[in-house]
Amino acid sequence: MTIQQAQAEILRLKKEKGVCILAHSYQAREILEVADICGDSFALSAQAAKMPQQQALMCGVRFMAETVKLLSPAKTVWLANPSAGCPMAEQMDKELILQLRAQLPDYTVVAYINTTAELKTVCDVCVTSSSAVAIVKKLSARDIIFLPDCNLGDYVARQVPEKNIKLLQGGCPIHAAVEPAEVRAAKQAHPNALVLVHPECKPSVAALADYIGSTSGIMDYAKQSAAQSFIIGTELSIAEHLQYECPDKSFYHLSKKLICPNMKLTTLMDVLHCLQGRSGEQIELDAETMRGARRCVDEMIRLG
Ligand code: 13P
Ligand code: SF4
Image (cartoon, rainbow, N blue to C red; front, side):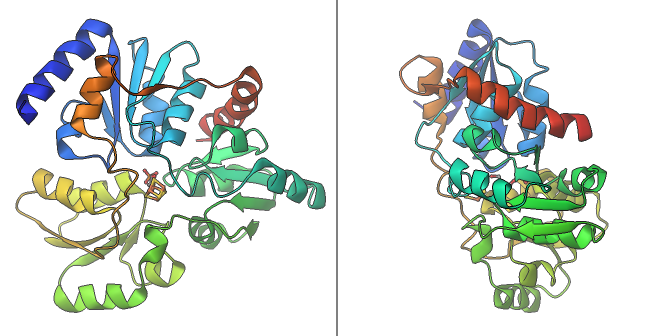
């Protein structure tokens, strides 16, 4: 079977079965091409609920599929590759957060959307990388616990200095692995290029960037900028997608380490097999998790 044949069969089946395909921007191009919605965590979670289809198929990682289920409880939600998890989402457990809440009862607990549905049940509000600053600004509380990503939390704290933000020691192992020396080397190799980085990178890396933003933020900035070349400080796939979208501009990788093995697990054939009922996992959340986590995600939508 060729890629084109697999794509044609996916398009036929998703229409026949009423399935909306959701793909995070870190997915391979051949998957983005068959998706109904492509985007960052925010776009996927917000737009999926508005789609008319009764089934949603997530090409991304588990917490993203859980978030879709939370916002569309009546829909059947599939994770195309059940082994695709996000290590950051699983870094902290409920007990740790409950202990912290007991110690700091006046703090508002803000969870990055990259957390399990179970963890969200003990948090007050979710944020995505594109909505974090705006939502934290709007919170009435001054004292905030931000989890799990201390790099994103540090970025938010710098943008919202009026808040007292307590950070925990979590983060994305992929983005956090990039070193400032790699930014300096990339700038030396491409002196006219602008450096665009994701806030999951270390503060010492972000400090050397021309722009810091979410996946969509980086893509929009590169497309709209008058500059001709860019060093992309997020998952390697983004430079590739941008190169197709802006063939006259030049895109370089900030670091070869920026490859998320979990995001790469989903293949086009997984999507086809899921639609054929041969693989994939249907996301089920118990009533208590649905209720508790939904409250946290609803608060994000209300403030976002
Ligand atoms: P965004 O899609 O919100 O930019 O997050 C990046 C990421 O690491 C997703 O897992
Ligand atoms: Fe998780 Fe980082 Fe991979 Fe995103 S890039 S899925 S945050 S490990």
